[in-house]
View 1 (tube, rainbow, N blue to C red):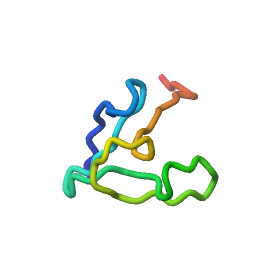
View 2 (cartoon, one colour):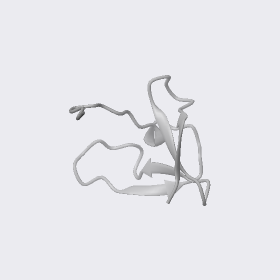
View 3 (cartoon, one colour):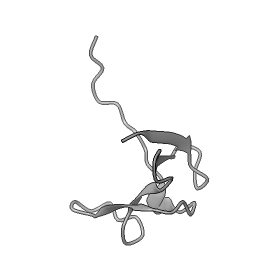
View 4 (cartoon, rainbow, N blue to C red):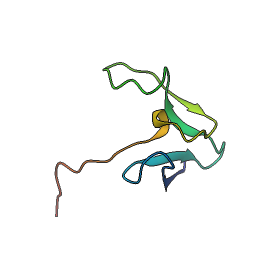
Amino acid sequence: MTLAVTPSASAATYYNLVNGKSGKCMSVEGGGSTANGAKVVQWSPNGGAEQGWDFHARFIET
C-alpha cells in the first residue's frame, strides 16, 4: 500500500494519510477519539480533525 502524506486543512501541524490506490484518508471512527482501541478506517477526505495525524519522533538511529 502506498500512502501520501499531505498537510491537513484542519491544522498546519497535522497531516492527512491518503491511500494511493483508493484516494481515501486514514480516519478515526467516531469523530477522532484518542482513546486506546479507537477504530481506524478509510474514509473520503472531509477536512475533519478525525483525519489529521501528528508525528512525534522518539528515537533517531544512525
